Image (cartoon, rainbow, N blue to C red):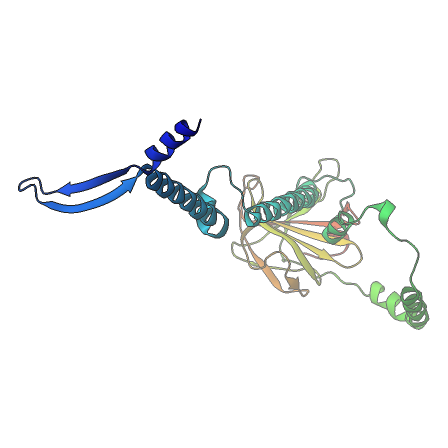
Length: 286
């Protein structure tokens, strides 16, 4: 056994010479004395060094991002944020679709109740009814009491302001087609010259200002007292959605745009709390 161990030690410690010669002159340029043990140690140290350097590159440098299957914490966080944003955008799109469908029903002459309060739709999606705390807070109770006290002195003022609510004629001209519920024509068609200024019938906010295939350029305004006015077949629009408009302010120019028109005129509708009303009962167009 001792002889065998001695032979192994001799083999490991047996010296070899690595010589580098000039091929043309056979001149010795470099000579290195090696043993098998030296070669084993050098290879082991080199392997350990390479493994350590690779580990450091993966753990502490951006090169780790290029390793297939590797996902950093930053990438996971970014992916989670994008997922939340995508979900939020889907909810916004769904709410906008619901809002635009209400406007579409008005454009099509649907007499069912239409809810244009977009803000209430958005707020309703943020909280479940079961999670809402319906108990009034102390601040809310104090505010309600203060408002009730002030309203006692505002009854006459509010009554007179509603009684004096006057509608401004959007355009002057002869009526070519009257308001007719049986024919589902919930409007009056006022004949006007092309590019005649179309004016707001009352103070309000623009809730729709876009192009439609059937009725051309359309603008819809929401006023106080649950009133909505609709102006169709315009040549151009001067106000955008969200603009605050005063009564008599120009919001469009008359034209004959859209498929359902035979000449320059204004198709004017009035809706009260979601139901159509005859504009000639409140406005003198001639």
